[in-house]
Length: 73
Image (cartoon, rainbow, N blue to C red):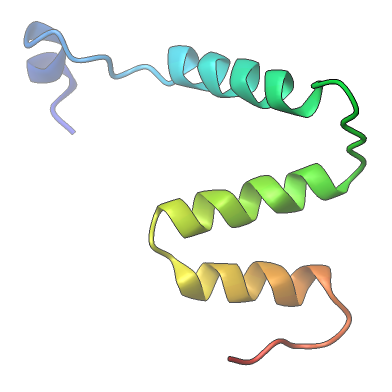
């Protein structure tokens, strides 16, 4: 990457702000009244990220890793 050019153009090249925003949104959604999340929240977030990025093969891998049997479709 051409960091110096991106900085001069005013682009944000640090991930801290994005990671903080994601953390805030995830915490807000997971701590709503009546929500009871355990370890499944990580699986749900991984599935959503793979789905939103168009990586359906990634979704299958995540499901297979979380379950005892392979899922085929």
